[in-house]
Image 1 (cartoon, rainbow, N blue to C red):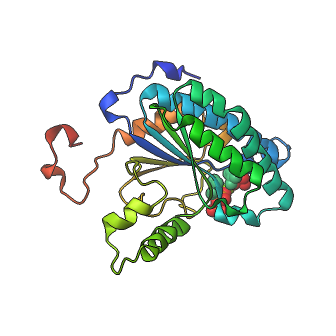
Image 2 (cartoon, protein in one colour):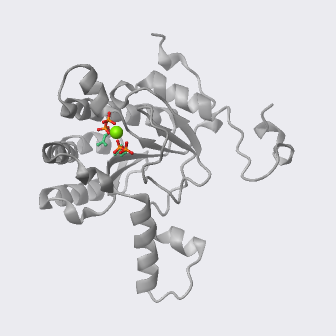
Length: 248
Ligand code: IPE
Ligand code: IPE
Ligand code: MG
């Protein structure tokens, strides 16, 4: 394996916001004849590593899909293991985020979580709220459609009779953060699985067969390198872009 730390990335082209579907934990474990939950455990290590790598590269926002609204359909033991892991991470790893000046946010419907998790989330968000480094957002019991609906419902409750794009965007869970520049899905599936439907409108997509627990520095760098080859036209023609943004 080549040393990824030698990869030099042009700072101006580092995505400000990366969104990740961390998929493939179960298959990673299965390949090793381990229980699926061991894959989730290793997946948490991969996340810790990616946070560090992204912060080092100057990424401002990292948003990761940890548990979808649909994931409640999994076997009960797996769901409760994931909840336990989440609680443990909130209790143990948040301190390290804080020491590194990072902010933690959790987006999703909190109503089905246990009181200990809700408390852990609130404490972690409060502890890190004033930090100015990378913002790590964990999407847990999150769904893209749920997010759009809860925003629309807030507007309705506030008496809106007409909903504008700007007003809706202000009530989405990630209001205030720039939309993701780069979307990564590991584990080989090429679908969004109800992740950030609204905000991914113009995001660059990167799909890889690498299973999430195997996604290390080298893979992070490869995803960013791929992003850097893209020409983001936002509807324009290539010729309309400033010369330095044109790719031939
Ligand atoms: C993603 O890995 C983690 C969660 C959904 C919590 P999976 O558990 O979906 O792993 P695969 O897709 O079964 O390999
Ligand atoms: C998407 O992965 C959600 C998370 C990674 C948390 P899934 O493994 O649940 O997605 P599907 O079911 O394959 O679409
Ligand atoms: Mg999966």
